[in-house]
Length: 218
Image 1 (cartoon, one colour):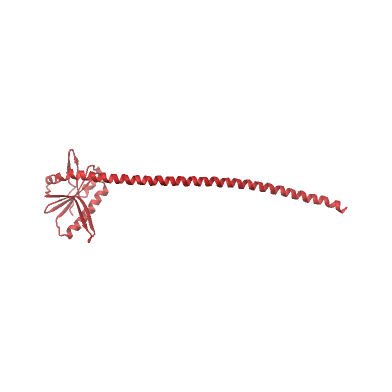
Image 2: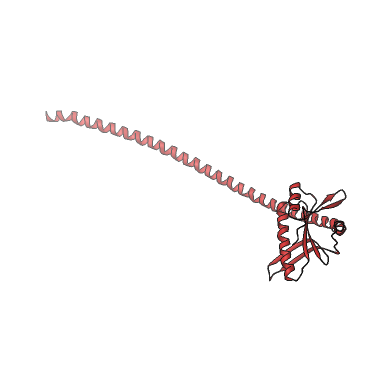
């Protein structure tokens, strides 16, 4: 009688274990499926990262190539600008003295591409055209298309040349002019307001426009 009574209890326990095992198997299968999906997602992410790396590398090569092309273009433009400036100087310089004479500024000598190098006093300047006589000096800066920065640089150039002149007992009055083959209206007004003469093309020759009010002297 005791053995007969234990059998239902054992079966109940076995059934419970079987249910637990089935549930465990289901959970394991679901987890395995989740792990597989995660593995696939990781693999796909890896491919995307690799593809992105290739794109970044290609973009870097394109940027490097663009940089090289820009440097080459700048180099060519620099040479062209230099040649253009030389051409303008050759066209303008021979007639500058005559043109300034009409404005009652008599210069007897003209020099092109003059450099001032004073390492002791840290004074350096490059001058496109240097006109002079016994009393005055005219410093002419020539650009293909002057901008505000060029005009401000010319002011600094004039100040440096004044310092250099004082150190070398040159008491002459220094004046300035800005010339350009293309002169914007705003840039022209700015140069004239700063006390510079403006030199611009007119037909087959050029005109010199006096500054607003009295010319600035350094």
